[in-house]
Amino acid sequence: MSKKIAVVGIGQMGAGMAKCLTQAGYDVLGYDVSEKSRQAAAALGVATSDNLATALSGRHIILSSLPNAAITIQAWTGPDGILAHAEPGSIGIELSTIDPETMRTVAQAAKAKGVRMIDAPVSGGPDECANGTLVIMTGGDREDIDSVDDVLKVLGSSYHYTGIIGTAKAVKLVNNMMSMANIVAAAEAFALGTAAGVEPELLYSVLSQSGGKSHHFTKRFPKAIQGNFDPGFKMELGEKDLALAIEFGRSLSQPTPAASAVRELMAQSLASGYRGRDVVAMLDFYNRAHSSR
Image (cartoon, rainbow, N blue to C red; front, side, top):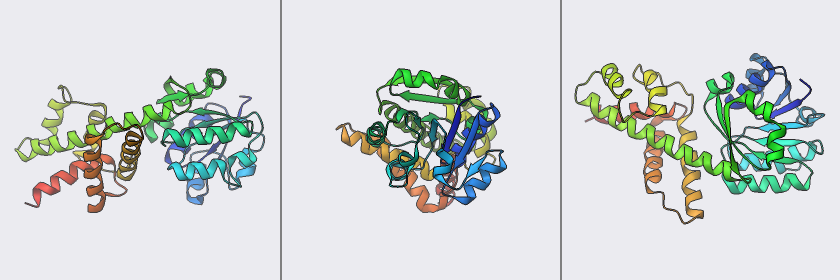
């Protein structure tokens, strides 16, 4: 492959994408401020650098997958950030779950530096990253998106054009509102079923074929009923995404009472010791609430 790609932010998601692109034959170099993340990515076969300028040198496609809006702004626009070192004419693909306004701010700063930005959040977890089966939402100039079509197709089983910069982040926030609400509702309902004496495996077998099922129910509950809450998507990330969506709703004077209730329940679970666990640990949160009575 002739394209040289830098991946900035090689945590669970970024490392998975970097691995997928490396295995597809691209020249990939990953960067992260965390030595632990660099070591973990290197163990996956990803070439890494501990210097951002080195990671970006000669690279005309820059992917970023970062934890939150503040870090994204700093990583791109800080005095020693991505835009300070990016090659003129390069394309940035911003994959983080952040608010649309932050995405537009980054895109405006990039344009001033001659860097073209693509708004490209993803749906899926570490397994989908590694397998190249993410669903990608893309916003920005269609010609820019077309120019990295091959890269996007390596990362995802599908990608969808949403419109101008910022619209993809909006779709991502809406998606995560629905996903987190589905998980919490399923956990509450499932806990009620088992409290009534129905065996968990039997309950799952019936519900996974019934009208109340969802993507996350069939994906996450088989592990949950075995007591496995190892994180694919951490509880604190789910709560963070809901907070983003609620604030986004406020900016548009759009009420989000259901999302607010779900976010409060997740905040309670975090306060109860579920930080670092998968979002489906909400099932254990409900089960413990019942057993304590």
